[in-house]
Image 1: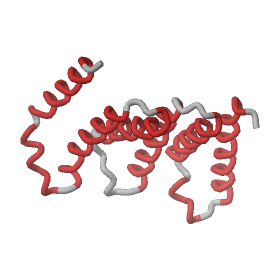
Image 2 (image 1 turned 180 degrees about the vertical axis):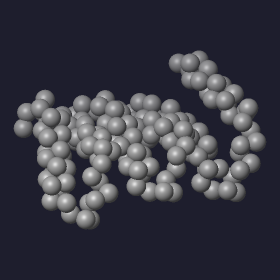
Image 3 (image 1 turned 135 degrees about the vertical axis):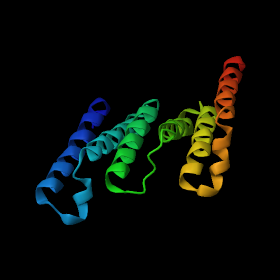
Length: 154
């Protein structure tokens, strides 16, 4: 297969399966008959293209698109899904970690971003972590400090 056209090919295959399943109206897949599934398909196609073409820089954008699709699918279908702004930095942190597996760059940034977002999501999901919200003025300062630290680092 021509590596340049693999993204379009994977996207068309995924969309073809999506519309075929939608036309067959199989009850098992009824929760996937919504727009977040198309976003998930595009994210998976971008990840498959990135691995097949060995363009590992595209892993970041593919993981972000897939993560956003999964997040909106969860919001649309699962009532207990976390609807918190810190989910988006979590997706970015995971995307940095996925890309760092192949490119060996931005691993520390991925760990920091993922850790901060998990630190902010825990009080929402687990009530025992409510003490974290008492530090509403401290965590932005921590983020600013980490940003300056990363700028000063060579």
